[in-house]
Length: 275
Length: 290
Ligand SMILES: Nc1ncnc2c1ncn2[C@@H]1O[C@H](COP(=O)(O)OP(=O)(O)OP(=O)(O)O)[C@@H](O)[C@H]1O
Ligand SMILES: [Mg+2]
Image (tube, rainbow over all chains, first blue to last red; front, side, top):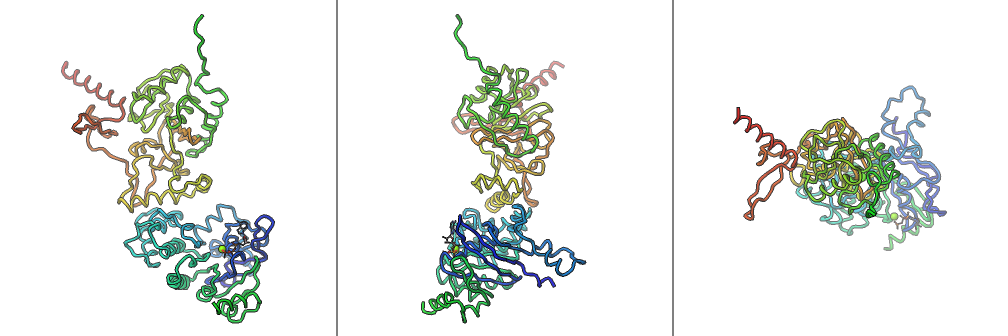
């Protein structure tokens, strides 16, 4: 069974800024269709971890392995179970820059906290959503536009605004365009760094609902960074709690939030309850 | 005693500099459409006036060459005349306005109407060599996109044109794919001229002085103007003939002929226009005397 292999397997991973570690000794497996929340206070290393997993920051120790579509779809008949595991999971440190960028184009999405970091603010919404398709070799304008229209509809952008640039959009709309741009090419894994925290509280709830339903519908695996435990509660299956660059607690989200083991997590949870 | 006069090295640039430029040109020939960095030198004209083209011409010209210089298709603009005079003086080269007699043609904004032949060299003056610049201003990033052959961005620009205007609105410096590999800016020639680059028997050299880049289309190389399957590249077309020489299928300029705003459409390629006009006068003369 294919699903006996995790999608992403992280062992003892760390990233260093100069001689200090931004995050260190992180280990977990992420399964297809699973949503993992990474929570912790400001400066605890959440964004560093996300950058390192997505190959935007260097991996300075440990290993990250990813099950590529290319290998898992290939006929592996004849190989023994152990060999198949080994063959399925690709050590990301062995990839060339070209191969990493191919993963970014075809397999992985990345939703930034600030839409301006993930969108071309002066290119139309349609162009923004169409760009990943064009990057993947689509060369038929009508088909690119139809696909962009479909995705903008799914993230609830009015059809008549497809030719306007995100610079003219509200914060919530920009974030929805960014999500469309990251889902349009059919990724299997999406990284999100505080996708809702730049928005008003009322807009946050609606966007979270949208993310939750799309992720479930598409069976996506997601690593979502948030400092908001309510976000973790609402969309994630499992949660990692980070402090000072290390994971101090992890488990099913409901268990971590209802019955926190680490003193620090207990503090985090109680501060929410009082807040 | 005669007045002391300055002796220039042949072609103005010193031999070492010319070798540097020729090495860049050879690299360009080996990798068609790839932008080769080079150490752009001072030449006696301001940057933005074709210093890249002048340096390339200086590196390939010799006393046995015949040089033609065109600016927007015309041989007689101040800039074209002074570049021609410059090389007559410093390279001892002959000059001409006739496309078919030139061995080297330095150009700004046009490819001549007269088809080019083997052993001719076309030198383009290039202001902005990077076709991806408008959407990605970071040079490190555009270099990476070329290296990894990631050209999705180029199509975003075309997409935006179609979304906004219903067609691809770019009519000059229209991007091309050279030899199936590198996307290249052809310099601000009209898209009308784009098809002339494809499989041309001439050697096409591009020099950007301010940006310090050289690139090349070797003879008989595929040059494809980008487009979508359902919105393919369409070169500009002119439906009327030139009002001076009667040529059809040539690039026309609108010339205002009086202060009431009346205009006529005439060839932008002055050499082509004169020769066609002279030939038809001769034909008429022959007919009359026959
Ligand atoms: N570019 C950098 N250079 C040096 N140190 C950095 C850099 N980026 C982050 N750090 C440090 O690494 C640690 C983790 O930072 P990180 O941005 O990952 O935290 P975070 O959990 O995402 O915080 P926030 O909730 O504020 O976004 C912090 O101590 C931070 O100061
Ligand atoms: Mg952060």
